[in-house]
Image 1: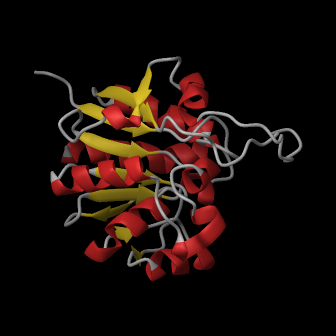
Image 2: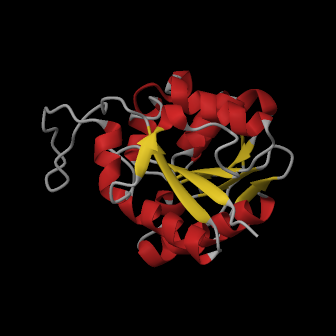
Amino acid sequence: MMSKKIAIILAGSGVKDGSEIHESVLTLLHVIKNGATPLFFAPNSPQATVTNHLTGDSLGETRNILVESARIARGDIRDLKELKSSTADALIFPGGFGAALNLCNFAQKGADCSVHPEVERVVQEFHSAQKPIGFICIAPAIGAKVLGSQNVKLTIGTDAGTASALQKMGGVHENRPVDEICVDEKNRVVSTAAYMLARNIAEAESGISKLVEKIIQMA
């Protein structure tokens, strides 16, 4: 029996301007531990910003999302343009500020945000194919924007301001602690708070492990 293929969408490398590395690696780990095959993808586009992770200051540089994401994927990653709903059995978005800067501009525009065209396409394609989609940390903002018309159920934890913005986009927010997941059976969407609430990698792992397991069960 062939293993299920799980597409993991990255947004760069590093919590402040790309994908959260712990969340990305934990997603990868649990995909493999659950007997599935991970496939990494990222947009071949410039990052919104580049941040010095030691000081938090902008470096004033231009970097490519796909090139930076390749750091996490150890080079085994493809342009998001190549991802079709037929390529994989499910889709997972780790968090990190890059999900709200590079995959959409929720960080800048909140509920008035727009989503990267290739990200919007793959979310719509996987949803239309009834293939499960996982959103981690701040990534549920993407789900709310793209699937808000479907009244998608999501969690980013318990932050009232962020939850309100998701609801303005049409999402139905449910408060969940760090070690729980929110499951929308109708839309086949699973989300978890991870570092929106987690104080350390062990706490982030508690929800991510459940999300990955549920996504693979649904696939």
